[in-house]
Length: 286
Image (cartoon, rainbow, N blue to C red; front, top):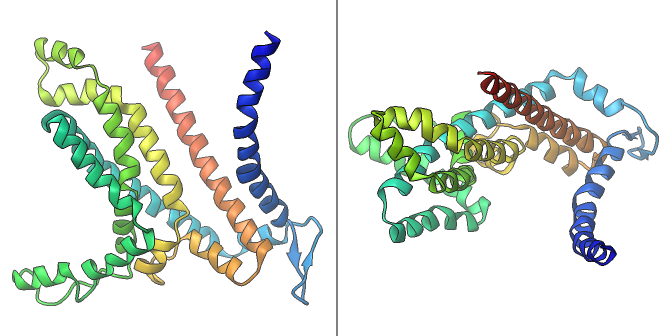
């Protein structure tokens, strides 16, 4: 028994140390920095105070930008889900296995390219002289170019494009693991395609949908590259405010903004978790 515990400890120590050094320690240092302040001589005062958090609470810009970032992250999640769910279902149910693997790779491999390059490429698509306006003008559908670049809509489009694989993979895996015998039994009992999808497929793949929504919403809410390149002043997100603070060497304020963002994301996760637990308990009672 002691030997087994020793072996288990040897296996756990490396990943736990990695987690401590790369995750816990930086966040702890940032939390400590957020309670410091910069005096009139631009020197950091190493004393615990709430100056930075009071500054954030007093200025509606920061809380308004945080709410706007949450809204755009939510729209990104909904957009990615609306594309990933039917696409994953089609790939699993109607595409041969060999071709299916190729198509899934075709959707994932672009993610290996730099986010900066992929985001910049959207300037060539949705810009006033971009591909989209050229096609619409050539078809006679519009009389003047649509001004989509440097708007919140452009930011959401870019975020959906960037984070689509994050949503697609867990949903695809969940649909691929479905037991066909359950769907066949429902079909034999008279359930049509729509009823089978709504009452059997969706509940069974719900864990994959939830996982995809979480891993899409969290990074989208803290994004700063896409809003900076596609949104301009109209699409500023909370991550841009954090970047500006650190660029100005105001580490305490940037740390406080980061902790506010982290706390907001954790609060959203707790609310979602609470909601899911309530639904599970209600289903159990029924």
